[in-house]
Length: 429
Image 1 (cartoon, rainbow, N blue to C red):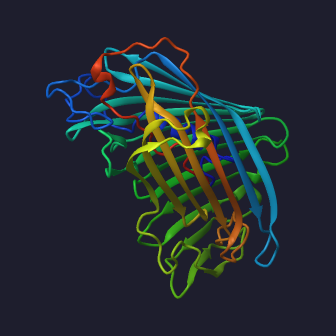
Image 2: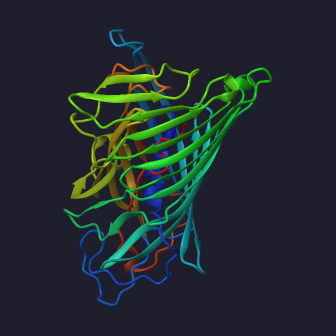
């Protein structure tokens, strides 16, 4: 399985942008929002004031981005790594539209990369009552990615709500954007090496999930590559992966990933021969962060409001301006697929134009680690990195092009928000 992740951080960029533009998943709420005690910057408001969302639609904000990374790859436990740098630049256009009957926003993000791919993320977003204020809630999203002969489409829904940002943005306030989501994606490649893949999964807020994948090689003489698999990941008991490659002449393989013990993770491969791997138990050195135990939470997406800040110089034209600073810390571990992804993103939220409050700049550093964890599709079972991709990304808002309309003094009440990376999550068989 290979959850939705591409080289570099363009998918992350889209998720960050829309997060801001959107919220999480909840039910469509009333277009009427309750009063808030304070605005985004702590300004007192009239007790009966009804705050409006920070963005007045229709409006489009362009975010030129730069993403640079280095990927290191190991072919064995004692091999020296090869190293390959990479860079991606382009523009992400975030277009806000409002359904005035429901009060729900349609936010379309379009990424046009100089590498040649085009990506779209379309989200339904509500600014809904939450506590004594409002929250940005992503109700659903769908996306497409086209890179030459390769096409991927998918959708996420959030049955138990995903709260991305709480307003007002009060210094010291913290929250989690982790949420249960039900998702699918389909991939198709034409031409040389053509294939089709379908993946569906349900993932809990703590990162446990169950999913299934079917893969078909579309080459006329390569149907032996076809397979089906299931994955059941747990954080308190062994995780299980099954793989059926009958067209290749193999019987069903079951791999059981035990909890760590005495510095090792036992990976049992079971089934009747012939199998794609030798049956038996591989004692994989414990590669989990902290070692000694599987983390209780496999997926975390935590936000904290730092308070007022001066925008740094790497935000270019926004350098030196005053903003509200929010820091996001993300981590995602998969004991079956053997990856551990982390990033830290810093958001600078300020007034982009009269009546328009949004983020002017997002700076992010990330690292995507893949381990030789004994999975049948991994590089081996030596328990250390088989690849590490580390990079940084900057998204900087351009001046607004659309005509800006002010909604009056209450338009400044909400703070800007930026949701989590459900979009960038990794799945697949």
